[in-house]
Image (cartoon, rainbow, N blue to C red):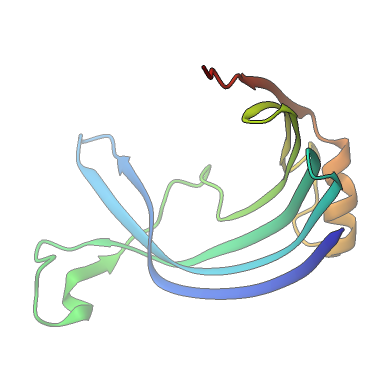
Length: 170
């Protein structure tokens, strides 16, 4: 039996995050960039259980939540390869309907049962489970505990796989 538990908290400041390409009424495309403040929190759990030398179970789960806020919008200038960094951009206001913040919540789990039913011949049963959000009517700023609890309200994606390997011998 082996159990590993971990947590991670990250914060990222990116001053040249691509924001989007927007075409105005005159047909001009604006290649926009922004400053991005992003925060990510995640946990992971891994459980390996050997029931017998021929039968094992492995479980892995990782929920995470990432939020970001865009600010200081600008677009490429007529001289994007200028020597001066500031000369590469010019002020820009993106369309008002564009979101200036985001929240992504996701849960990824894998379960693998391995049975060696005869020497060299193995049966694998795999279940992959995932949930991705945010959920409907989600508030942008709320506690990370609530974000993780709300992951279980999201619609799951389940994938099942069975693999059989048979050793041919003389």
